[in-house]
Length: 150
Image (tube, rainbow, N blue to C red; front, side, top):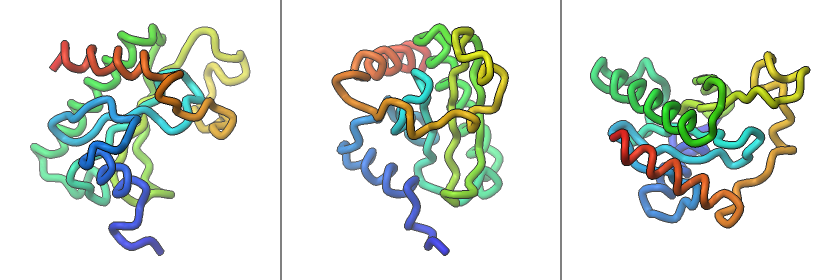
């Protein structure tokens, strides 16, 4: 069993705080918006709480409201920048037992067999790994959009 500080979420938040995580979109009231390690769909992002907590239920009511509002703000930014049709949101915490939320843009041009499937139907490992050169413009546009909306 993982200790409470041994998750990828903890490591990513620590890297974001230290300004060494290249996927950081920005700091929001509840935590960090980052691009996904694999861009299996362009604009896939996550919201990581800071401080890290085990689950949404571990937050008090104002903390929950902040996290969920920031999640919607991040989804709005991804929609605006990518032109996606909609956003799928997911909070699972089964593999990484720390609160984090997935922001997954969905597109009209997705393969027909995947268009209405849940995002876990994709082969995420086949997605393009984050690359600051390849994804730099996307990162900059998302930062701008969050700054504009915030």
